[in-house]
Structures are given as structure tokens and as C-alpha cells.
Image (cartoon, rainbow, N blue to C red; front, side, top):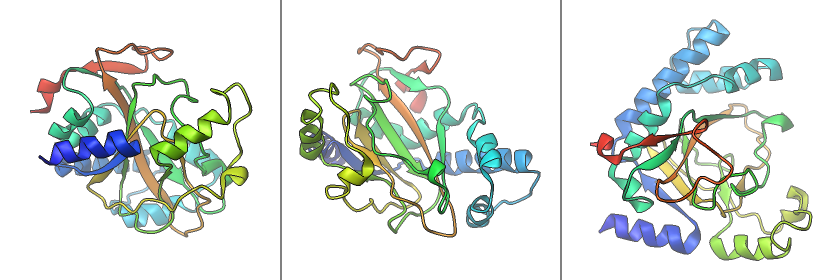
Length: 238
């Protein structure tokens, strides 16, 4: 069973790349996001590659306007794109992030870089699963990198469970792996302990991606609450 293989990879490595069974929901979500960006920027760009080029030339204020968009209904479309593969991480109802995070990585703009971190450092429950999806193919070194489970756990031991200062990106450079290659219509699922980030973006076109968080409803949310999450019943996937 494919789901069984993917579940084993998620447990062994801390992350797994999946093919989305319901890619059309991701296409719908991308179209909705492009429409909202056009409304903010007063443009009429419908092609994702042209949007990547245009966004790559924006200043920080314009980028912040896009980042602050409340993407109503997009989380539901994204989790429906994952479809039955959600059972890799949950068999019951889930807590689903209400509004996804839209990531815009821009060439030579350090504020757009995703620094090395994990979800625990961001205040999420250890039971959190992240689903990261690019809105276009990412087949170069502009994507997301993740440390495998053993390396992540070894790294955390050096901080004595976050009691000591966490290493900077420069200090981690020797152990940071190559970025994962992923096509539009695929997603990366990873757990809350998986150390991840993105390298300095040097491409002319921006990298546009989106991510959501969820967890099985049987586990506590810890610091996060239902202002951040909503309850989503898995029967709504079908």
C-alpha cells in the first residue's frame, strides 16, 4: 500500500514527499491566490510564471501586503488536495490551520528568507504536521531543505532541549542538505521536529509556496488554539 510506504518514510526521516491525489483543488487554490494578489497590486496577471517574475521586483511594503492577506477557504482546498493521504498522519478529525501561510522568496531580499527552525520553536504542538506546497515546479536549489530525523534530533541535543542558544544558519551550513526537488502537484509533509529552512534566493523569479499545519484532534494543541486552528472532519474530504 502506497500510504503505508509514505507513513514509514514520515516516521523514519521526519518528512515525506507525496503526490497530491486531488491536484485540481491545488489549482483552484492557486487561481484564488493569484486573483487576490492581482486585486492588491491592481494588476491582471493570470500566469504563475509571469506572476513570479512580477513579484520578484516588488519592494518590501508590497510584499507585506500580499503576505498579510487572509486567504479564506484556501486551507480547506489544500487539505482536500491532500485527500485520502491525510490518513498518513491522522485517521480522525483534525485541527486545521484556518489561514495558510503564503511564502514569497525574493532574490537578494534577506527578509524573505526562511531561516532554519522547526515548528516547536514557533510555538506549535509536537504533534503538528506541516504540509508545504509550491505553486510551481521547484527543481533547483530555491526550495525547502529538511534535515533527516537523526540529524534533527542530534542538533536539538546540542541545545539541551532549547536551554542553550540555537546555532545560526552560518554555523549550520556544513550540515544543511540540498533543497528538495518538487513539482507542482506534489507536497512535503513533515513533523514538528524536522529542522528546515531555505537558502538565500538568487533567482530572478520569486519562489511562491504555501503551507498549512494540522494535527489529529485527539492530541492537545499546546500554545496554539482555535483562533489559529479550526476543526475539520475527515469525512469532508470525500
